[in-house]
Amino acid sequence: MALEATDIRNADNARAYGDSDTDVWLGRRVKGQDPELPKSSNALTTFAETYPPLGWLSEDGVPFETDTDSEDFTALQGSQLIKSKITQTTRTATIQALEEAFRVGSIYWDHGEPKAVDGAADEVLIDLPGSLSTIDCWAIFKFVDGENFAIYVWPHVQITDRGDLDHSNSDLTLYEMTAKFIGDGWMITNNSDYVARLNGGGSDALPAGKGVTTPTDTGADTNAPTGDAETE
Image 1 (tube, rainbow, N blue to C red):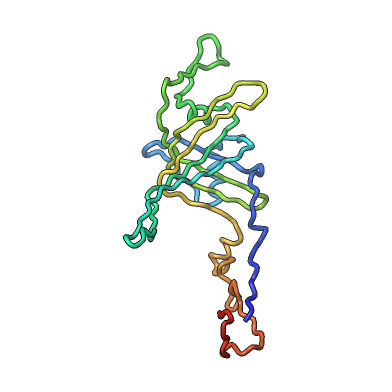
Image 2 (image 1 turned 90 degrees about the horizontal axis):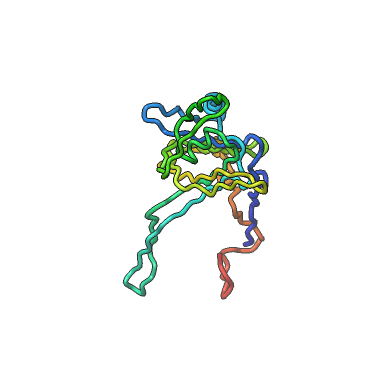
């Protein structure tokens, strides 16, 4: 009996993010004053009226990295591996902001509010700390590809590593920060496959009789002895 594979591949589900609406929001957590983070794209539009994004980002994108630690367990018999358990998961995002603005620099440098400069109304003085501390923030990442978007919302991230700050006429100055995800977050998307899944469809919820592999009747008597031939 031959098997006929159902092709569920869909190039429309492949993404190349980075359209002009792509943005990252990053803000300090303040006890009792944290904003209500959005749970829809419309809510994000309203949110952005009060909380602006970081602005222009490096062409390198905003990579998410996932690192896991696991422990293997072996049995006495033959020292065979019988179980593996993830013991720790660490997720991080690398943000490379291009704009020299307070909303960027205050997190990169961990500095406070600017101060007035005597006799110079168009200048400010900013105290820079000698050592950095971990900064607790909330974060929103909006990635856009045409009409498709994926918005990741994390109520708690910690800003840990900072990258080198170049000052030259051959490269853009990048304010690189590593955001370590703490606890749970959520994703908002208009991906058609996810929407179909909500409504009982999707690529892994095919109609009855349309499984990934479908038997094809060859006319042969499948109950007849097969001898040394391979059986299904």
